[in-house]
Amino acid sequence: MTDVALTALQLPDFGMPTVEPRIPAGVFQARCAAALERAASAGFDVLVIYGDREHFANIAYLTNYDPRFEEALLILRAGHKPTLLVGNEGWSYANIVPYEINVILYQSFSLLAQPRGDSLSLAEIFDLCGIGANTRVGVTGWKYFDERETDTPNLWLEVPSYLVDTLRQLTGDSRRVVNATSLFMNPADGLRIINEVDQLAAFEYAACHSSQSVRNVIFGLKAGMTEYEAVRLMQLNGIPHSVTLMLSSGERTSLGLASPSSRVIQQGDPFVTAFGLWGALNCRAGFVVKDADELPKNIHDYVDKLVTPYFRAVAEWYETVGIGVTGGDLFAIINKHIGDPFFGVSLNPGHYTHLDEWVNSPIFAGSTIPLKSGMAIQVDVIPATGTPYFTSNIEDGIALADAALRASFEKLYPETWARIQARRRFMQESLGITLKPEILPLSNIPAYLPPYLLSPHMAMAIR
Image 1 (cartoon, rainbow, N blue to C red):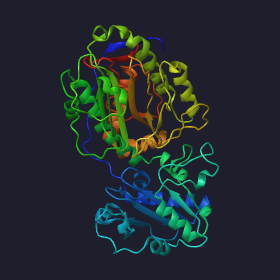
Image 2: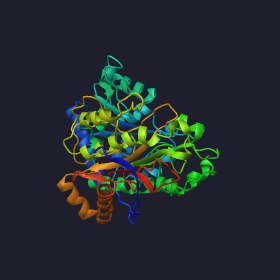
Image 3: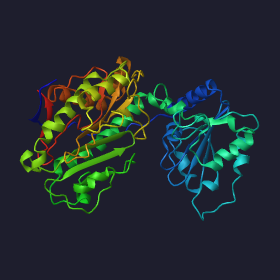
Image 4: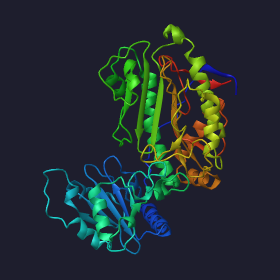
């Protein structure tokens, strides 16, 4: 794979969905049952799953309910109906749960100055749910810890202290209330690491919209626009975001995660945008120029020095990724091509994605975690040179699917399947990237990397 070149390409119109996939009620119920089975194996009597506006994915995975203004709490106990605690403004929205569930108003979750005093106390609610002396409680938030951080990682909890304090008081021993987030999010076998066909179809729906928005920016960007005007090219439609929308140009790109501003985009500027919806995120970066002659003189070799080895690394990542491949294998590929400190690749070169943009990652040095069918993975390799060469970025999502899952996908979601197959053909025939049968590209700009953003039909390819 030595012949990588900037090439005139026609990016196909892969189409947009006409039907939005929905997760059936039975899938949510099966997830709750699986969570309780895992909890029992781990020695827990009860699972308490916390969610808030920012950290909603675990509770939404089990219920379809995502906290909008307030905190929420889901309590699962074998033999009992799931119980969802919500604040004042979550009461009506709790009807979004597609199966029968106990909903309890807990007004302390409500915003300040709103009515309080009509709820049972937290201790009374926990007692109704069977949490008392000697109960072993697994608490799920959005993060877990290991021995690099503390001698007692299972006792570190990142949910609000008033919840943890009450649980530990009721159980009578702080060691009975422990972190159970790994049941859902550990990189080897967390429950949210493997996705059902319906969930993958929903992720592809999101990816169509997020990638189309980034595509609109790539092909509509002009010097003289403000950053806000560039965002208007995205034609956002209201699908919930998984991350804050990022778009910046010029000196503002050094901030990395900046939101757009009224800054006027100038010819020659570095430029980056990243846009994520539930289940998908896409990012592209480059320079606001037509060709190398419009770059600053000290970086005329931008494509040769940075973009070409970067694309070569990501292309080999794509050609290697597959069922049974380990995270360590993928890490080694990126390190082989762009491990030099100049490239500044410090984060995991790829990670699991879900309703939240980053669940966890099996991709790190020496990882022996094998990839499996049903995984949704973000191809996320970020150079951070800290030099005038800026960066390059080609971030998109893929899914892994064995023969049975592919057959199910094709049968249940034929429109989605047709887009996936068209993307595979484009990557293989136009970009020169050979994909294993189990690789399902979800993005409408699959591995499409134009380094000169005012020449969007010139992109990197293997020749």
